[in-house]
Length: 239
Image 1 (tube, rainbow, N blue to C red):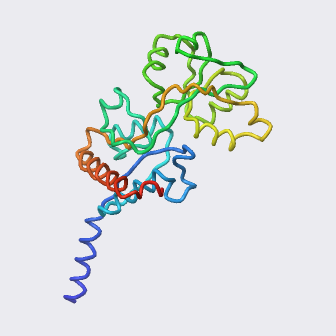
Image 2 (cartoon, rainbow, N blue to C red; image 1 turned 90 degrees about the vertical axis):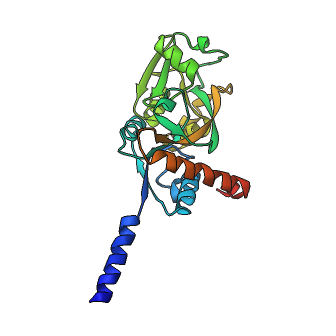
Image 3 (cartoon, helix red, strand yellow; image 1 turned 60 degrees about the vertical axis):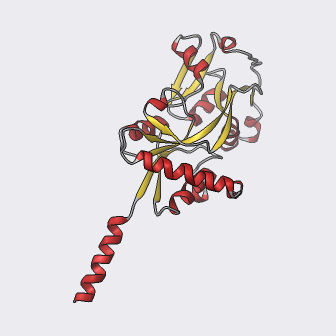
């Protein structure tokens, strides 16, 4: 009986010590997807870093705006992959950069779109996804109604609206955009959408932790130290 009690106590102690980091994310191929092993390269990096510290990782796939709000409210511990912005840094700690992405404007091939400054979008109908940050120049122009922005819940729907010609341009990460186009449309339809090569910006993507969560600074420190370790020993290139 004593031996059984001992092992029961050990088992209970192990369960009590189990720790799980809950990260809200969304389908954003090729960076992250629930259909990928380890949820993709970024997810694999995150899992590797926390596993070394005895922390399990749980990924939840939610609409971007909902995941953002739930992390902000403390329901989820972190969100990824996100650009850091002044507005976001009011509520979140940003990790060190994980990878960089180039944001561009997608448009139909039968709409000759050229731009140099944000003023070149004046009067256009522009797609946007709820919870996304497209850079300060875009956000300012949106607030000042320089152009009409239709913010909806998903990137996929934005591309379908673009295909139908209901919006004229849609800002999206270049790699993500073309991955979605290949998934959503036939080969003939894919030829109807292109992008303007002038980037809106090239920014790094991060893991964000809510400032009002008492565990966030520890999780941030674990991640940044682990990321530096993977970078210094060359392992990061293998993900």
